[in-house]
Amino acid sequence: MAVDNDGIAVVTLQRPPVNSLNLDLLQAMNNTFDDVAKNKSKGMILTSASPTVFSAGLDIMEMYKPDPKRVETFWVTLQDMWLKLFGASFPTAAAINGHAPAGGCLIATSCEYRVMLSGKFTIGLNETALGIVAPTWFQDSLRHTIPTRQAEIALTTGKMFTVDEALKVGLIDETAADKAEAIEKCKKFIKRFDKIPSLARGMTKQIFRQEVLKKLLTNRQADTKQFLDLVNQPKVQQSLELYLAMLKQKSQK
Ligand SMILES: CCCCC/C=C\C/C=C\CC/C=C/CC(=O)SCCNC(=O)CCNC(=O)[C@H](O)C(C)(C)COP(=O)(O)OP(=O)(O)OC[C@H]1O[C@@H](n2cnc3c(N)ncnc32)[C@H](O)[C@@H]1OP(=O)(O)O
Image (cartoon, rainbow, N blue to C red):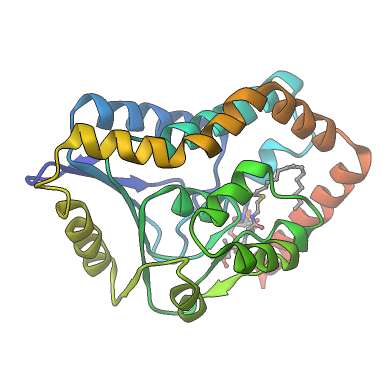
């Protein structure tokens, strides 16, 4: 993590090749978010070390033939990550410098502002297209970002938005020519709060987001059970195996 002179933390996801979210990366993100809060940074910008992928979403390997204890910890840690990021009192922005499918889109939509690089990248919650249901809090993060009707259509069709489409629907706020420009634009957003008392800002944000946060907080165990029941179904394991093989085949072409 780098904190620059103007007190804004730039947090770079760096888990090659595609920043898929495994247990270790999620734990590192949680520790970093705690540090950013403790250090009283003015705000935080999330970006990626990869030139083409912001994050490929959840690491499929955490869900394929999983160790029972680890997969439960994985899910609880993912919930923690979302609660910390979506509920952060400090300003948050995402400099999306590549593809952001599924969990990658979750991270981006948990932030308050999004700048994405122009190019052939896509962003969206594609779960239904993969035959799975996006958890309530994934859906809530999208509904919080784009109009409800657009969110429903995007979720039910598993839509991956091009950069132009994402800008048009409000899934991203701005585009940038390169990563440096995306970070600058995110900084400009965070600096808008320079003259706003941070306590009032933070509390207002938390009030604005509390309904959605409370839904997961009061349903955490049920949400975890639902995930574990699903992931342990033989049919789901079969789908994961096929999906992994498809990804491997694609990457070898
Ligand atoms: C699919 C069924 C899931 C069933 C889950 C079951 C129960 C769970 C219940 C609820 C959870 C619901 C929530 C899910 C949210 C998620 O985030 S699921 C993950 C969805 N993510 C994706 O579908 C993205 C898949 N990846 C891509 O589309 C592309 O990789 C990319 C991001 C567009 C990048 O393309 P690029 O060409 O640059 O890279 P490659 O495709 O060549 O990949 C390189 C390398 O990385 C491996 N890999 C890619 N994505 C993942 C991943 N998500 N997890 C693990 N590994 C991944 C890929 O296989 C290659 O590996 P290599 O061949 O060994 O090099």
